[in-house]
Amino acid sequence: MRVRLACFILCLLIALTGCGRRVGFDPPTIVAPTPTIAPFFQERPTATPFIPLLTFTPWPTHLAATATAVTSNDTSNLQIVPVYRDDLSPGWSVEHSALLSSLSLTQTNVIALGRAAIAVTPSESTGILFFTLTRESGIELRRDQVAALRLRLSGGDTPLANDAMTISVVGSNRVPYWMPDDNSVTLEGRVTDSAEPLFPETRLYFLGLNRAIAPGEWAEVYVWLDDLIYEPEYAYVTGFYLKTSSDLVPQYYVDQIEFLVRAP
Image: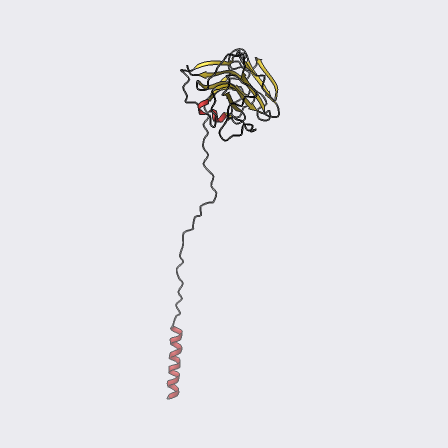
């Protein structure tokens, strides 16, 4: 009897074990969004440069296209004191120019207006085209009456970059003409015999030219004296110069040079 009861219990346990089912649990897959990573380097937006529309005239020509520097100054009430129109005006000299390979005051192939213009070839070093008032000129350009220097400038058949040349206006507190040993003008904090220029040398882009002067084009350049930075105080304007070198400007031309003066 005991044996039968034991066999019955054993068969029952085997049957229960076979009928049972192991349930497996697989956790649901969590789908996370793919992260987006901002790049470390992005292309900066490119600004469209302002280029004024110009009327281009083929080169060479006697009636060249003219690019006018941006200026807000009024010229309507100013008087004109000519320095160069087809030739140097009486009382002006270029004899103190330096480091020029060639200089012609009467070339006729490249002109802005009139019959002739100045042609300049700088040397490999910095060449200076220097206009000065002579002792015998009888001209008196008072600094408080001179508003601006105006001239026309061209690179001929090559472009003239707006950072390739500087223009400077010089003066005196002693006499109304230029003297090589004139030390009457000083700048506060500056040693008198310093090698640095006493009068500011201003590049063309600071004079309103926002791009290069194209081949065959003339630019009308204004040097407004009251707008110059670090200009010393002086009583008389006695000259001015253009400075560049042949590696920057192989050759250039200047025409229609004049001072704009306020009425006394």
